[in-house]
Every structure is written in C-alpha cells, then in structure tokens.
Amino acid sequence: KSIERHGILEPLLVRKGERGQYELVSGERRFHAAMQAELSEVPCIELDVSDQHALEIALIENLQRQDLNAFEEGEGFRTLIEKYSYTHEEVGSAVGRSRVTVTESLRLLKIPAEIRDECRHADISAKGILLEIAKAPSVAAMRILIKAIVEERLDRKDLRERRTQLAEEGAAPTSTGMDSDSSKSETLRPFVWNYQPKDRPFKVSLAFSTGTEPEPKDVIAALEDLLDELRTSLENE
Image (cartoon, rainbow, N blue to C red; front, side, top):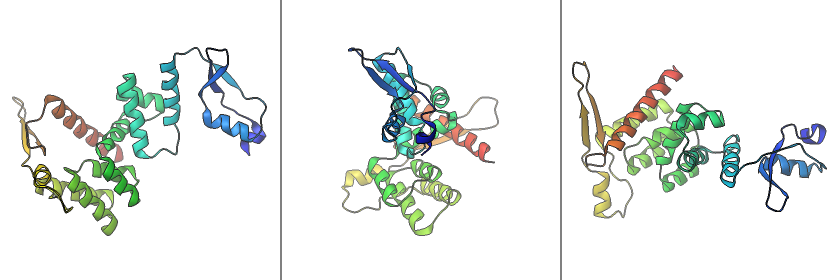
C-alpha cells in the first residue's frame, strides 16, 4: 500500500550490462514490490562497478534485511571476511552492526549443521541462547543444553551456568550407536594452556577439549572470544 501511494522512496542500484541493458545490483525486493504495484518507473542510481563489487554490494544489502536468521547473518558476515577481506569492524560499519555483534554472529557458525537443525526443530532462535550453545565444549554438550532448554525452560543466565558446569565436568556423549573412536574424541582430557606474565599478579589458563596442544592461532581465537564475551557482559550491565 505504501509503495502504491508513495512509490519507491529509496532508489535501486543498477549498472549497464555488456549489451547496454541495465542490470539490477541492489534493491531486488523493492523492484518486485514495484512490479506488483504496477509502477511504470522507479528511481535508480547507475553505478560503474565490477562483477565482484556488484556481488559485494548485493550481499551487504541482503545482510541489512530484518528477516535473516542468526545463522544466515553469520554466513553473510563470513563471506564478506573470507571473500572480500573485510575486518570485523568493516563488516559492522557496512551493515550497521557493532563489532561485537559481528563477532558473536561468526561464533554461531561453530555450531554444526545437525545441531542447527535440532535448534530449529526445538524452536530455539534467540541469538543469546544460541551463543551459549555455540560455546559448549562438545557436540554432546550442545545436545545436553538443547534438551535442558526444551525441558527446563532455562534462560541465558541459567544456561551459561549449565554450560560452565559441563565444561568443567566434561560432557559425555548422549546418543547411542557411536563407535569407540567417536566416543573417545568427545571425552578426551583437555589440554591446558597457561600464561604467566612477569611481574603481573595474574595467570591465564585455557582448557582445550581437543586433548592436544593448540596452534597459536587457536589460542588467539580463544582469547578473542573471551575478550568479546567480557565486552558483551559490560555492555549488558
């Protein structure tokens, strides 16, 4: 109704194709809405961009939609980072999100596809709850948390406490029919990485559930996760 009354208020982005015809770069939903409203013309801005830049613009616009689920958003952020070399800060600036929000969305991608399906079937979609599941020490622990959410209606604070408890105790696999190698992989004794700076009154210890010494990049990623979680906690206070 708004488009029928006022037309398209935000111009579409187009570029000229090889044969002189115009190609839509950004604004597909507005274009289809204009067609449904039987508008004879719409405002456009012509761009001179490469194929790659056009895809980049289209991806950024898609990420600005409000109906993406948390995993779709995370996948889009990862594409900008891996394919177009964006930093977390640049992704946030491009799509109107904070750097912490971008980092949290990327963390959700640690959840395996089968666990994402289980979350969907259990109607678990809140990003804060999904983040606690993503931080679980194993796939088995993720399933335990999902079951607790469904049966006990845990909020994020209670879920965080349950996740911490599982990490300390070591979550044993709950599914049946697992082979011995798979079972062992989920119950390995964690490898503890320690850091004691000179002349500083603290020590940092990180337990890695892989059971083997982590690569430096894994330690850095874990420390970045910790810092982001602390920043998020401060923002929520």
